[in-house]
Length: 276
Ligand SMILES: [Zn+2]
Ligand SMILES: [Zn+2]
Image 1 (cartoon, rainbow, N blue to C red):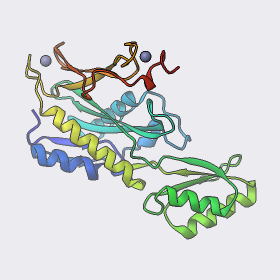
Image 2 (image 1 turned 135 degrees about the horizontal axis):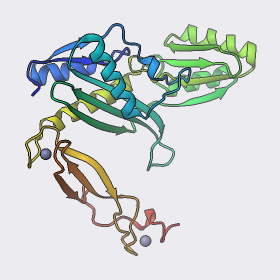
Image 3 (image 1 turned 180 degrees about the horizontal axis):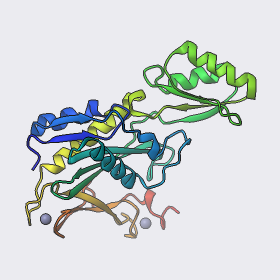
């Protein structure tokens, strides 16, 4: 289904660097980049343009636009969201959605990667020492930073030079008295995020290489997790994963994987009844 086809990556943040080699190696595909696709129109992390759709739909729209611009009938895009991890408290997480659309055959595959490997952070500061601490914690200068004023429209993105960082900090501080510093989450400015996208690409390919036991359609894999692992003391269902469901995107065949983490009971620490 994929051998030697052309594939376009819908990105202007150089995600092709990590995604294309995977597909070129696996199926001898020819990777194409788009030079005139402005993915910022679908939303930016810094809020100048709000994302209008959920991440899956946003990635889908990027794929469609890239296929339109290049006349290629196979496209991949990723869309990331950053924030607190949904189940681990106070741990920041990077959630990446990869969408692959095959227009020739009329199929779509989606992979979600949730990783705690991220430097995602932001802070309002007024001291240079706070800036330097934040920079160190955020893996600067290999990872870029963003400086913003709160009231004015002063925003400096993609800073990866110490002198520029301090100059821009002083400039905003002088005007506003406080500065918002943020990690730049755009892929080419954030090697940690780039690694997560690469990992997501590898897992998507693994999924594409497994076939539905019922209809042999590629891309058979875990599509959702079902919560409800019982508490070890009272047996009440907890929020922890009870089972994974593998499903086919073409036919309705499903397969259950019970106790995916090898546990039949959850610690009472996570039980809403025993430890409210
Ligand atoms: Zn309990
Ligand atoms: Zn099937």
